Image (tube, rainbow, N blue to C red; front, side, top):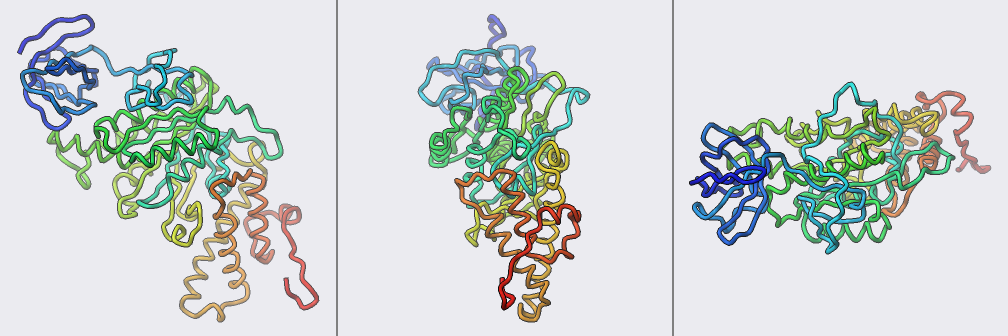
Length: 479
């Protein structure tokens, strides 16, 4: 092997070994971790890779397009002396790209306003601004019960066969900047969406594109697609490329950006595959011990900073293997992020859409993005009351399964009626139904009005006087 000096770096001819998407290079000279690499095969075709590991004599490189067709002696490896950058610009909205930022929509290369390091720039914690102001998704179980706040990272925990893709497309079509109830909405051009899909099938990718086009949302969406038959190693780059564009739009163009990442489980599987090839000591369920820090390097790129009006809000979507919320991927994701939205299989079997389970779901920053000046001053109280009532419904259902519904007290029967109405009217809504925050809160009051006033312990007397609906009854005492 020989070392050839070139402009911007140096080149090594020949590699030591090839294992899956990994190549090992000897005597590479001065090389940095995460340095971008060009791999030229014997036919002169160039592929891109990056340095995974640097040792005294060996350098491990992952090849984004895979190693098929590479040979030990006929491969040249060119080290370019810096981390991987992609071109970013506002022109990328309305376009579809691959993991490395190359157009997939047969359009021209976008004019670059800036070249961004895909690893992002670490945000000084003292420069962060606490997330406030809600984002309206049009979905009552999110807006009313688990409100999404600008600058938050709120994952969607789902399972195989559940409609998380449909929920994601609905959020993309309907998401708008939150405004206090009754006020006109702010300029839509301030709001952009960056959508990154990892390991999705061709039909799912087509579904996303068609849904965004039909809903008229594609003009403010930049899509980064990694398909199931693409090299798995490219999945490790997809969310980082997407977030690089999001950071440019938010912190340079002062836009509020919603980033949707699906499916993070596929990302973690690719990470495990590369770790196994490298011979690293596995941790829980074969995942590498650095899974937590790797996920943090993605999730922590959300937020707001003092020097910019813009913000980055993340909704990572992951499918829990065997619906196990203690699996390492959802478990570690829950530690890093600020809550979770849980998609429930039992609700889905009942034909309820979106099948979001309210009780295990949580938005830790909800309290700071709602109330007077954001949504409505009764939002916190009515949300808490609906939550408490629905939690009691589960106890009543358990009791009725033992003694029978006919043996329940009358107030418990009212709770059962409330529970059915909550699932059919509040949780259940059409995929095309875009509810305002005002509609969601009024629907919550309609539901708690099915219960006696003395049961409403989470709302104030003034709020009861203003919003409680007294149901009219006929002369026989029927509603």
